[in-house]
Length: 114
Length: 115
Image (cartoon, rainbow over all chains, first blue to last red; front, side, top):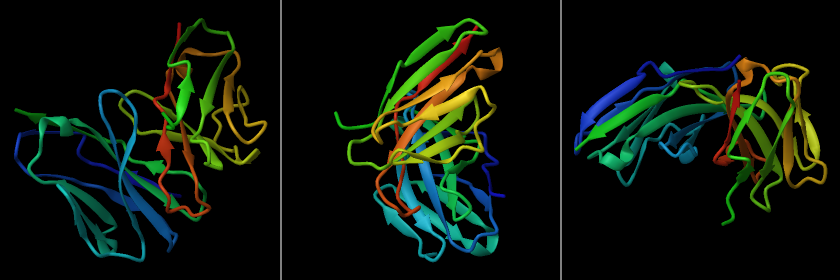
């Protein structure tokens, strides 16, 4: 079975601070894909980033970066120089060969205060 | 706008009534997914279609739930004899590729309230 755990239910930071959102996943599959989605107050889930299980290279895309470590089954997401508009619920998700559905974590609510 | 659309955006119904939701995916997308999201939780997968074929439906919550995608374009999700526990946001998503690596694009959701 697949499982995604986001231990941080809520994080509050002040604008311009860096913030890291944690994600730990469980799967027996050797091929899988990890995603981060953002859900702003409007409710629509927005795709942010994706990583496959064969590529542990960490990358930076603008103010977003991610740290994928297979050894610890973690896929953490960092926002640099946070902005008020980053306030949202962030979901980590997993897709494996066991099925074609996304398994989501419980989400982390990020509040960025001015 | 060429994103995923869902109708209605909000639905209030009385317990025991049937409800039907519609999802229109991005036009060239061959896969369509339904998820349910309850308050404070992540979305939970329900079912998905590849073109008009429903390839996974074991995750539908009960036999009161059914989904169709008759011509491989829009889809409907029906809940019969609604219960208060069915109150949730119902999300639709679509994707293009045959590859699980491709992102799913989500619609705005239909919020169901069962009184």
